[in-house]
Image (tube, rainbow, N blue to C red; front, side, top):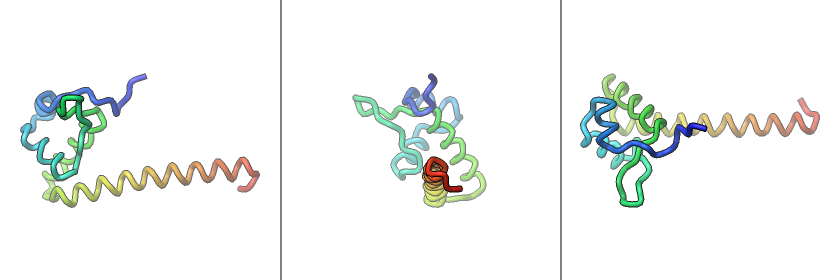
Length: 100
């Protein structure tokens, strides 16, 4: 099974893929917008999920948004995902109990 969260790509690889500067990737990590996992040696390792988020950051920055605003959008997206999962679990429990 292919794990979209597996840390596979280096800073240089991601910068090349997305045509961004390595310094940009370090900056969005330092400002906790997209924070990749680290290797045992402390190097940043990006997952496919991280790369998707970075693409979103680039688009939003192009629309004039600040990194702080983008970070908040990403936080809220994760919160929506968490709440949907929680809702789905609660609905499944209700179905098990025969409550609709």
